[in-house]
Structure formats: structure tokens, C-alpha cells
Image (cartoon, one colour):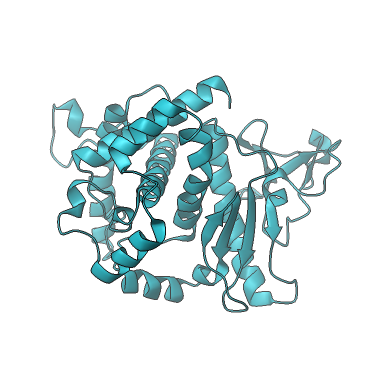
Length: 328
């Protein structure tokens, strides 16, 4: 079974995701009524497999309710892209909930619109995350990735990057000590953003950027360094959790005795240090990259993690852990 399934492809058992349990469960009947549940009203429109309680007055699940704007029903191409974007958003929200980060409230909203229809720019402003649905087209997104010289560009990656901007005031600015440490790692966010953006696109990243940043885009400004690092942390945690759920163990290609070269991902790594996560993560990426190359594909994980980048990831790891522990 996969996270997106609403039915088991082998036996036909109906499935639904129950947010209160953070689980994809087997249902007694297709609509979930026998289990005291019902399907989201966007089951067909957005391929949504999230469930609501029978007593819930809302028609939409908590994920779909966060979408403020979407394409018109008659725009079939944009609506197909909308369903893909909603699928990525549900995966994002599951991870945020699983990490104990706040996702409820009036501020967080999503505008999912297509630049093929109207001017749309992916970004974040005052709690509203805008995603350009036109990038759900693989060719268009790949062209954009090549134009910008990026090693990685996905719809899920956009969601993870933009949600980081949403969490900046909630996680970083609320605490003077956290903000001070953040400035020491990522730089001073008070620097003029427009000037930094102009400089970045005119001159590009510094030649040795890989020693301090997870991506070239992160070199633009402290806010973008934070967002790229935060998104990267979500990449790592989600992939490790999935690897752990499937019982993946990296123990080769040759017999080795060094535990640092063996990855046994844990499903719940919340209590681990960033060093422990990275020790599990890197061997897994080596193996997955090798598998991709065997298929004639590019590396699944086309990044390197310099010590300075791991320090930044550690900051994000500790901040999220502290936020989850206090429940806000």
C-alpha cells in the first residue's frame, strides 16, 4: 500500500487516511461508514483519500480545507495538475503533523493556480503559500530546472521550501536566542532582500558555495538559506521514515564492520541527534544513487552535505524537536 492509495491494488480493500491516527487504515466499506468515518468531498476532484468523522460538520478534510484558491472546474488540464499538487500537499502535511509542527489556524492557506491561465508565482506571503500548477508538467518543470542550473526540482520540493518561510516567524523569530543562533548560521535576515535577489541573479553563487550551503539558491539571502535547509531536512526525514517502514538496510556492497557505513533507518528518529540521522542518511543515499544509475537515471540524491550544512540541519532538527516537545 502507498500513502496515496484509496484501495489496495492487490485485494481491493478500501483504504483511507485518518489524521487523528496518522495512519492509512483498512475500511469496512468503500465510504468508511461502518467505521464511523466518511470520505472527503474532494475524493474525486483532488484524488483525496483522507477521512473525516461522521460527526464532522465539514465536507472537506483538514488538508483540503487549507486550500484557499484553485482552478475552475471546467479547466480540465489545470484541475489534473491541481490533483497532483493536492497529493504533494497531503504528503507535506502528514510529515508536519508527524513531526509535531503546528498546521492548524487561520494564517496557513494555499493558493494552487496555474500560470498557464493567469500570472502566478510560487511563493509565500503572510501565511499564504502559492504554488504554480503549471510546474506539475514534467517537461516544463525540467526546462525550468535546467535554466536555473538546479539539481532537483519537484512539486513536493516547492511545498517544503515555501512552508519553511511560513515557519520562520513561528519557530525562529518567536525566541531571541533562536534568532541569534540562526543569524550566526544563516546570516542576517535584515539584509535587503531585493538587492540580494538582484545580486544573485546577476552574479550567481560564490564559487565555493558547496562548503556552506545546501544549494546555490540558498546563497541568495538568509531567508532562502533557511528555507532550502528546512526543506532539505524534510526530504531527509521523510525518506528515512519510508526506508525504515520498508525495512531497507544498507550493508554493502562489500562486507563492512564500520557501523558508520551501515544504514538501518528508524521509523521514529525524533530522539536522535542530527549526527545520527546523517549517519543513517548518507549510506542510504549512496545505495539509492547507485540503483538509479543502474537504471540509466540521474542520482536520486544529487547533493553533498558539508559540515557547515550539517550544522544548519542540526539547528532545524533541534528547533523542530523543541517545538514539538512544547506542543506549539
